[in-house]
Image (cartoon, rainbow, N blue to C red; front, side):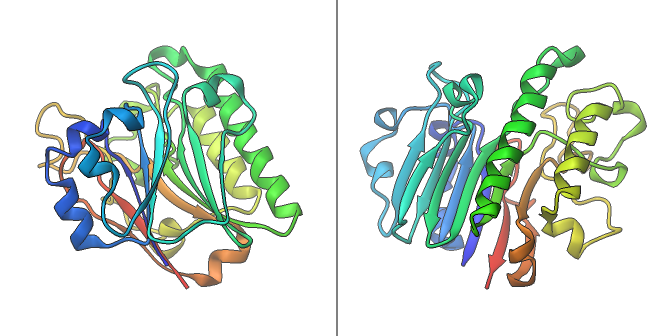
Length: 254
């Protein structure tokens, strides 16, 4: 199973930038999208019915904001939305498909914003999704948790850690929340497979030619429950795919 995740920073915008051609070439079995900023009816008809894919959307209530989607070549046994946190669920931040005992989640973690203005929302989301995942594990389920976590976990996950210690995505309390997530048993597959390699980023500011200079952050992940680690054959980043300030990330699951 080839799973790809991408924060597209506006689905309608990325559709005008070669998205469909890229999708036909990449051919993921599951494509998890974040920050779609659109309701299904706002997406052109020809893009809502791409050959070979079922499309599932979880838009935010607020127009032009947040939201998640999953395009699937496989028919799911169940589609579920939300994690029981009102504010996050109204922003369409978690959408999942279930195949047997495997759940694949498209997640868009809140941005903590300047000065940590949304600290309570970010930490509440981290706690709520961990609680949801732990319940799934206790019932014998497995999960792939794809998406934009809006957290660079360690120093090698961003180009300039010292300059960003008090910036959103690298606040100490955000990094601690990610540490607690991993200590609960969830596996950051890319970092497990590339334990000491910096320079692998998934987001770049649009200022100062940051992407061309690879001054970026790794804030997009494909994490798995412990039972899937042995089946996770390859985790990858596709930095050459344009169309958003993020690039796609992915996982090959046996």
